[in-house]
Length: 306
Image (tube, rainbow, N blue to C red; front, side):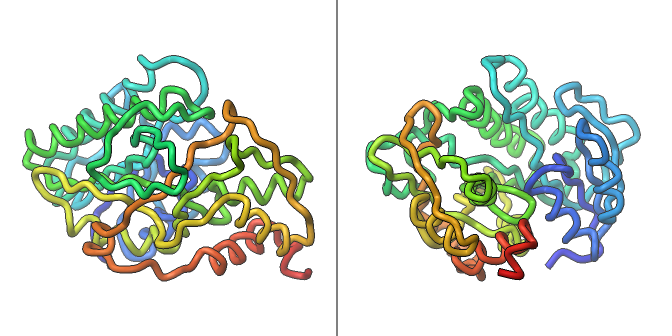
């Protein structure tokens, strides 16, 4: 556990970072930075116990943000549509360099990357290892995402060596909680009677990780930070296919999910080999069915009464 530490958390208003910041703020001094472009997001972070600063990492203008953090948790990310690779690289790659330079005296840095950096594989159940080939995985929701995150990893690795800053680069798979994530958005679609998009053949597999496990695993990931940087997949223990989890969510909601196949709009499968993470942390605490049930009832309170 992290206690009595001064922690910088970037992307503090985001899907994963906000509940993490709320969790850490109970026992630490957490500084949450973001652009806070969504109305009320900064106030929400402050109510959760974070000290906030509005900062655009791509500009590298940190104002009065301290430099003496014990730990840096870099969760901010550019992940939007469009073909502006230049801006994606400014935020995800250059922004990482500017941040690590500013916080070079930290004890350790955790950079959250993504399993989208892996090159596409023809087998939807292939378990990606950390040394598998990288490539442009063509994420439909953000064409620039994979390339700019590969660049971010290269920058983080370089900065770890330049500044002798112990670093862990953790490739997040599918995270979820009542605050969001792919399973949560699928549940929302089921509640609205909307179709779930699958790739041709109908198979899409992921190893999902619940937010509570993410929160608990940050400390050991920081403890594993090194120079050169430690690289590890960050995901749950159980491969699950989208069709199965949607049918399970449908049972919880009393609804029948509908599916359609469309390669242009479906997210490629991402199963991970977790042996390295297991060596560092051990197994996750929350199985996917228990986690999905908790997420469903928190995100849609009416399900608690069903």
